[in-house]
Length: 88
Image (cartoon, rainbow, N blue to C red):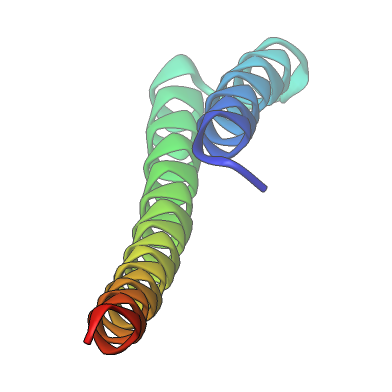
């Protein structure tokens, strides 16, 4: 899953959560203050969950990039040593 797909998923989840919260507000038999409080709580919980998920995904990507960079550095060093050996 690439970064743009992850961000798209997070944005879609957030929009879906807000729409769901608004529908709940319209159909729930509660006072407006209670509904508003519940919606804020639900939205904040979803934002926190998505923030945690996105943070984990960014850490995974960072680790993958670091590993790829290290592998590439080793390959380049080996290639240079091979060419220096061929030239001698």
